[in-house]
Length: 159
Image (cartoon, rainbow, N blue to C red; front, top):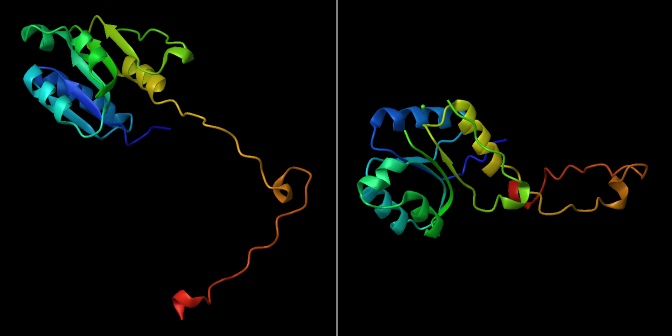
């Protein structure tokens, strides 16, 4: 199940690639997407963000044109949780062990295709189980049935 609240940045100087990536993400159920076309624009957005971006999909060349190592920029920025960086066309996202999924940074030789993007989103958007709660005694398997629900239609709020 996709987490529709993920904040995603697409950083690429080529409008067609930005649009293609945005459409692929939309097809996967992600809509909180901000496309940027220059490193200056990316830097301003990241530094002024009130809450961190969950993912940066970025073209290495965007940073190199500005004289910046984009991978290092992502590692040192507290406002970017995960990064999927590519060089400029069919590939496979490498497996990332569960223990190393806190801040995933992957570099690809080409623009991610739909399968690669789907694989990466499955890594960073996996549901997190915080804990399990005990069921009340009446709801446990083999226990008594829960008491019947009462109709509280006539309360103070609808008099």
